[in-house]
Length: 322
Image 1 (tube, rainbow, N blue to C red):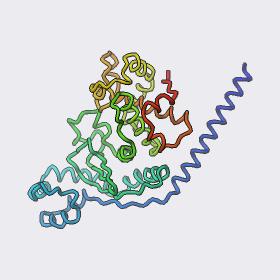
Image 2: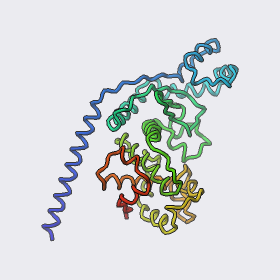
Image 3: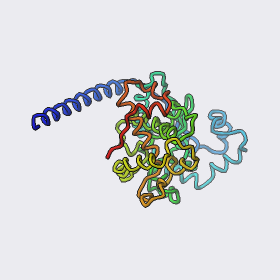
Image 4: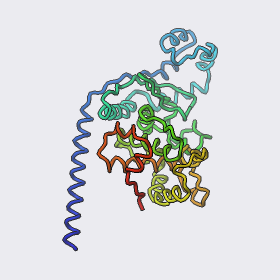
């Protein structure tokens, strides 16, 4: 028996070492990918502008000046003391582009490694009156980043914002947020609106984010605190049992999104554990299912993204951790 245990331990050790070597080799290739992109600090340009500069600003950056808004709106914004304070705080947190380059360069390298057709965008930084639900917006050629949503979770400007949002208003969330914006472009929303389909939709997005930002902690990928991640890990089996026993997987009940998928202070099992649980726990389970599917099937990432939820689930061999 001891001999078998020793052989098993050696096998596991060799498997881990081989896996680490392959990972290191892959990461070296990714790091060697040439990556250049422009960063346009529109936040600073607008902060330094005067009303007389407005016509030229509108000509140079028409995307940020919708025609339905009168010039008086932009002039008022330039002269608004609260906007000036916001600009000053952003400039203090991001005096140069070093943080942005450190966050985005490896991210873009990873995306291009797995999706060679990807072209790095021009990154345009703005302020958005702390629009924390639209922090990173991807278009065909632009990535628009609202830097006033990355000043630090405890920043005074975020007083009054619910904790489950404000905890992620920090510079370390730039790469995960940008990764999510591009992951959504590659992931089709399910035509069947049952709970399983939505869970796996978010699971695909989280899988891509984890692939593209490998140095981030798992909790940062999903936007949990370390304590919330630990709770999810420790209660995965109980969460899954609840979903199965209550026949939620193929339910199209609209309230399931609000209970288990949407940003919220906690998930709603309608049990005593609710206040201990993090929100979006259905996304967490979807991520686990997609991970299991990729581990147990010889399939490319692009192929996985095209697979329907039922096929991914049925072939995932998913078993929640005890």
